[in-house]
Length: 360
Image (cartoon, rainbow, N blue to C red; front, side, top):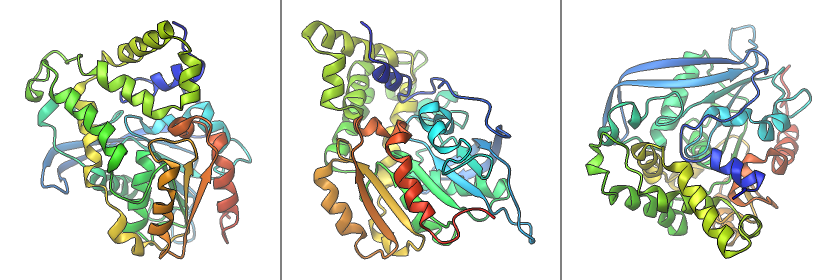
């Protein structure tokens, strides 16, 4: 079966450490690691040693007191890495000369979250005994990473999907640490309803896999991928895109098999901990802490954050004077997060409308 280019691309972006093709010619592109000894998670679990990997592009500019003035933090989606922002479909619309986040003007930090990319992951050896991290831990360790890089204030915090959810937490936990926030494809409320159901199906598929063995496996279990992978891509896409890729019975079944095959080599514990990490996400009680101008962006055709729930978002942010909510057309469902041409214009209009946005 030949997948459409977009669905093949989505397969490459699945809940995994699969390498993503990206341009390596951005100004001053650098990778680094930070090791934290004895990091204690919000739930009390402890990392003896926690590695945090990050990528930066651009060059920091400093004011007369030595503070970096042009830093931007961009946060990746579930199962991705910071480098997903370096794919041409995103980077060309954000980082090229003259674009809203022109890499020749800004110092852009792209962290790999706990459990992803070059950061510590269950597959490094602990598997089912990996500490139970949450989104609060992701945000706290991102702040520690920025401090390590000498960043104490941000021009912008933005993220896609999971990164969008973490952007809400950033705006609440560190309300004076940024000039603006743009969460993309997320909602400021606990994961519940359909959004929790599909996640729980993946969790149960892993936990009920005969090879899981309570997380104490030597050979990675694979049966779970027959359920989890097609469900994941089903949630990311739209009926139109799926029909295009699978217009008859034979090609639909082939699509199903192809999606499952993409995940057979993935580590079940990485997927399990990544999906479960959203359980502590609940920005609602602290929305009143937000001070920075905030633009929340969702898509009309996103079934993960469905347009039918847009009134709940508007109701939630109504008491927040600095917050705006915009629903864009999208075109690729939740996967519109990987098409910056669908949302970079809205981000640009919002940011350029803020007083003092451009770096001096």
